[in-house]
Amino acid sequence: MNPKFAHGPAPRCGEFRIRHTSSESPFNVAGDGVRVAVRLAPKSASERIQGLVRDADGSVRLKAAVTAAAADGKANAALIALLAKTWDVPKSNITLVQGAASRRKSLHLAAEPKMLLERLERWLSEFTGPTERHG
Image (cartoon, rainbow, N blue to C red):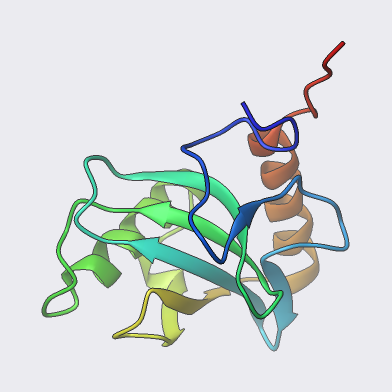
């Protein structure tokens, strides 16, 4: 297993798994909430959050997989449902703001930004877990 990220399969070309740090996050305060950068894999075997990836441009994204196909907005709706369930927020609070027809997406979570960001960063730290030690 990758010592920096123990969740999910090996990364593909152009991306790699990273260990979450406060300076490298897919979350950013934006207006009345938080923006979330996501890399979505539609038509996957299961619906789950797979971890963090860094795109070729250097941006950190949450990597998610959904079983729905990327047709008629079904994968986007499945992503919103997955995130709402994972973070226990109403689906109506999550809006797709960029990337409707792309794997790279930006979503907006409407809520008090500071408290929401702290909650999401805490979830991310728990999700990624401690760094494995070898030797």
